[in-house]
Length: 241
Image (cartoon, rainbow, N blue to C red; front, side, top):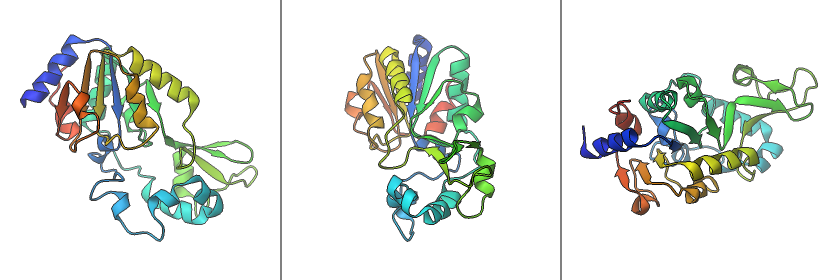
């Protein structure tokens, strides 16, 4: 075990109120591409930049183009939880971890067994008709041809995913701020902390230990009590509860 992982083990053993704040790097080890890495979606070629496609304006004006990209690149149902997802769920079951705050939309934390998951950017597993509000599941969206339509009223369906230009859910923000404010330990993992306003939630932490686990440097490394520059699944696979 690397010395820094040993330090993380000591912190987990010592404290009883941990909160995890994670991003795309938590899911890349499950086979879901992130946006900003060398192999990420930003570095692949499309007719429009992914950031443009995944905007509210683009969704409203060009739903056909939006869904061509969304169904091909965002609806990954083959990914399985990795060691990080599984260990976080076990920490919650052990009464150590109070919340998982995630920027991911892939449902992998819930699949691993985590209960208190605060999804800052929504989920591809929830969808609704923009006209009548009827809900639809992941499979319906995955199997739809072209723009998914409501069976009841033929309205266009929209994923419960926060697109660029859209605001975050106020209730999720409030609960995330409360969890971070109350935490003794905040573990930041698999995120470059480049996406706002989500990254600004870290400012509410007033606890004892700030831990950053990320392969690349982050803006919070200087403030952290412990920085681990390793893949997050590799780190959590060595943690004992």
